[in-house]
Image (cartoon, helix red, strand yellow):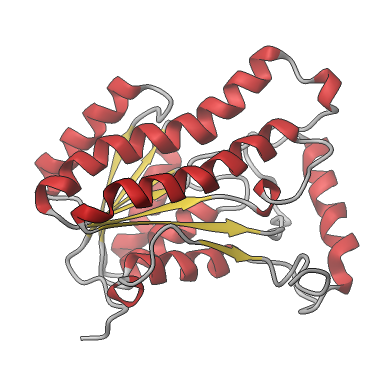
Length: 264
């Protein structure tokens, strides 16, 4: 068996119905293709059903669980449902996240709190709840989804940038805390990821146009290609596999499409 196979491992993917770029759904499908039994978690049933259907059509095993990751009680209930259905939890991918855009002075307290709750709080609540199960079994892999925005500044998404920066350091702190329990905690931070040509649910048209413009501006980079959800999913599978057993507390920035030509 390849050290990158995940046969019979149980993996939870929050935001598994797909966020604005479809990263969550791509991660779920790629984990399934590596052999994992996948639990896709989100707030809306329809997109979760679609991902589960696609995984099953390829011969994989998947179920869905409705949960709001910003609600600790809902997260605890989600973990109990996964345990009842799958028996154990081997992998957690904290992919739920998102942001609005705007000038810093125009971000309301509600926008700020909501962004941190969805990105940072959700990542912590899910990690803490799942870690209790992983500690009991003395093994586990937790992969957080950060962002290059957590490393560089973002003039029109300072709340998102702050939340992702916190996730990167949360990853390091949890890695130290849980290393004694054989739990690896790592982070994958996407750079700019290609915006689909089709309409993206819940993304305002001005934000969609802004992201498309960003892609065109970044065409002259080292690789000359926009990032794709599959690039992120491949990195997640690596961190979820035995091939990454010697790594914890790391942040892999998948940035070749964004600033590899400008930064070391």
